[in-house]
Length: 195
Image (cartoon, rainbow, N blue to C red):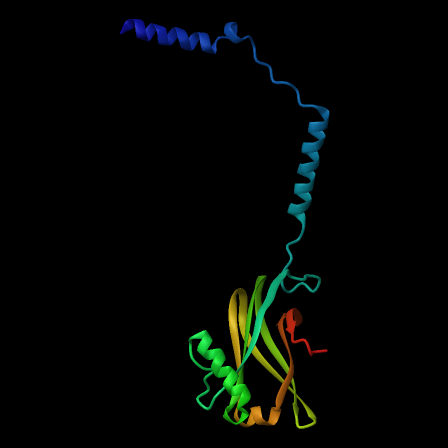
């Protein structure tokens, strides 16, 4: 036991001794390395001193990431239903309604959109503009849906055009969907016939 303790102490002494390894001197940094470190430190100080931008600042334009993924429109029957949950049956029913306008009670517009901003948007508007024809007369309709304090997410926003309102509008010819945040358009999607 004593032998083990002496061996351990002697080993520690030899490992820590400058006689074994010689004196270890750090290598001085190169002049280029010193300049590079100083430059990074200077850049970091500049960034740290920059005033924080706020939503109220008129010079500030927030980064938005919005997209309208899809716009669908489906015929509705008297029960305000586009048809079955089964997709195949639903599209067959839609085909039947398109061929029989007397059975159509309205249209449902569904806008799938997603987005985020780096601040709360006090008022985010999803707008759908419609153009149509009733006889030979052009018709227009604008529908807005407002969200309060929006930050991030994905949604389906639905608008129903039914009853007398649908009959007065006439046949749909073109549509234009937009997402408006802080008074500026951040995403849009339109039909082929929209000019």
